[in-house]
Amino acid sequence: MATYTKPLRPYLFNCYYQWMVDNNPTKIFIQVNAGIPLVRIPKECSGFTQTDGTVVFNISPTAVKNFEVREDSIFFKARFSGIVRELEIPFAAILSIYSQQLKFGTDFPHEQYYEEWIDNHTEIEEADISISDETADVEAGESSEEPDDGESTSANKRKCNLKILE
Image (cartoon, rainbow, N blue to C red; front, side):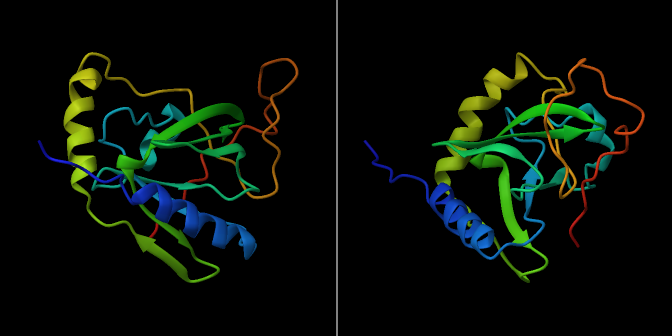
């Protein structure tokens, strides 16, 4: 019977993220593999998927609310096209974290743990493939408080503000 160590990615992610937050950049980007099981891209931003199947999200404290690093994923609330969404991204799908202002970031190393995680979750995913409208992103300085009437106004309707990293 093989023994496995805990995956390194959550620890590295948390270390890099906390260091970036402590240095106050306005944008912290993560690159996400949208083809990984349990990853849902908001329909408002589905056109921002890169040709390699990845999407870039701004997860800085000014862009998201209720940010949590969980054991197997990160969770946050933000806005897409003025609508508050919840997004949970498994660590298996997070490829990198980067701050352009700090000129610092990293690609996360390959881990056998996540290959097995993907294999185990692919069967579950095949039973329920869809693009979620339960997710979001916010421009720096905007509030992600939900509108009182549950509808977005024309003033806060806009295109999704994901930026593709090159």
